[in-house]
Length: 75
Image 1 (cartoon, helix red, strand yellow):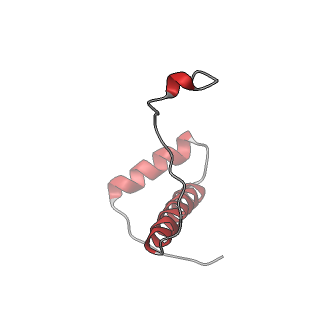
Image 2: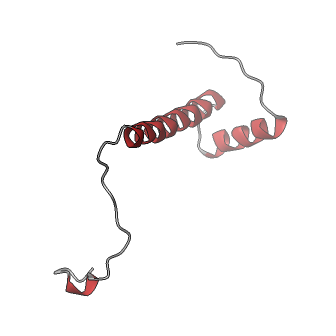
């Protein structure tokens, strides 16, 4: 495993310590979870951006439909 050293503000360190205690994780585990979620989120976002830039077809999710009364399930 690679070793990375960073300096963080004292307030962020206190918050990490608190979360580690509340989630019953070590500080290292908490930081690894936070970094993993950050990387996964940005990789997914940038993948979407690149696909849009390349003109690939994207699924469009609609939040509502004016014909919702006509749906078989009533949703």
